[in-house]
Image 1 (cartoon, rainbow, N blue to C red):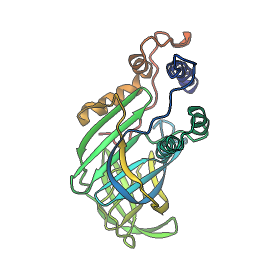
Image 2: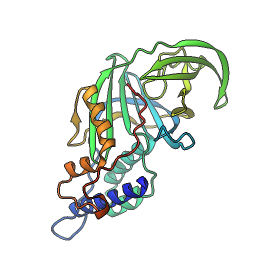
Image 3: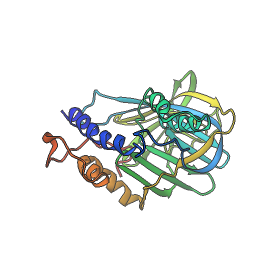
Length: 286
């Protein structure tokens, strides 16, 4: 039922967006423009993590899966949904080649939708993390100190992606986490905000299995790969607590946020006057 209502709501939203993209002169789409970026660094490597998460904590048997990537530079890292990264790269490539907007739309629609909603840029020296939340009707950004995770090295071994790993546990964001890391790979890095162990994190998940990251690929960068965040218009910058409260309210009342961003949108009859919500099960509960 929720899925059907969400599909109905998104269909209503797409139509005015398509109409607004038309030019006055011929009904054609406006020309493509490169992605506006705030560039922090240049990446030397990409570390890929499969992301399995439970949108609804009440449905223990249903997991959604996506692909994320950690871009590693000299001074900064970026953790982002791989499909979002591919879409940005596609936009820039089509701009350079002078491709038409229709060619771009056809190719863009062939890509999978991003499932991981937070892009992070972490600075090794700055000690800060810039967090972006990106959804069609809400774009937020906040900056916070890099978490200092109190890892406990625990007994136990495991093999992840063919690599023997050691165990560590910590409490972070209101959840208990178990990580598997390899001292053979000396990078003290991992997905999301996880890091600080004496080796690269190959897998990390919370005790309930709501959020699990598993390393499934490593690639050295060829050419210039930017460590960046999008610099779109209309990004709302808030303190962390207010940003996260706004995100929670967004999931509690999706239709209200869509109407605020796109005034005049005509909702289907079955959604008139109703509050449409979606499950909210974030990585950090606190």
